[in-house]
Image (cartoon, rainbow, N blue to C red):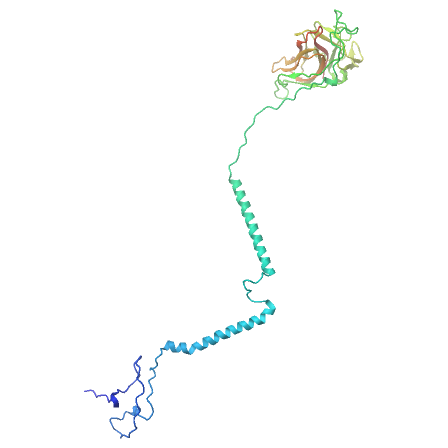
Length: 395
């Protein structure tokens, strides 16, 4: 049977070992007089015997928790640390203010030069970036657009209008071909006279190129050249030349040592002395030398013509033909006997005497010929209106 615990006076139970956590003892017990007791007295409790001093509470009898007590111990230290930090900052600011200025300027403080420069650099970079982006966007838009095809315009090159100036710059003369002159008598006693009028140039009707082929093949081309005041048949006709008139309507002169390439079938003709330039030569026959003549032959009326031919040799030849009109419209027909496209030149009807120099380039095989026909289309109605022929050269 367990031994009963001794009880303290006043009905209190003595503490043995540590007191339970959270147990709070009541205040100190009232003082009692000290009484002597004997050893072995049941009331003898050793360390717990009552003394004249007040009873002290146990070690866990505090009303605050452990956390609250720690906060109470360190609370003063935190306040002191915060105060010391603020004081150190204040002293450091006072020491560095004269050297580097305030550590953080107030919001209403004026901007410094460094800050203004930085702001300008930022604005400059922003502007350059905007310009670059704009250019890039424009380039991408231009590259992405679909290509525009230009309309194909077809047309022919304009042909230069023929000059109205007479070949060689000769001005028309007031003397008409039907006026009689002692030096210009036709077989019937009448003939044209006066100076030539060249105020209108031929009008093209067809292309000048005939039927050009590979080098060495047939070729035909014609151009109108100016007519100077003096021409040398000897210099122009290195192979052959021929001149009509000067000693009658049926007379002609030729190159004494010519090749005979020029063929003239002849016909009814009249003589005139109304040429536009002086023709001369030094190697002629029957007259060996001529220092200048304007003589020639002509035919009256519309439809009349001169027909000539030049023999081909397979080489390129240059033929110069000197012709005119007396108040008439005329046409020059050129062709090769071997065939191909002809070349045609035409002059409109006009009053007055006009003379022309045609430069013909052709190539024909041996045995083939260049065919030339100069004929009157219309006349104004005068007695001696028609077409004229002066000379031809081959080189």
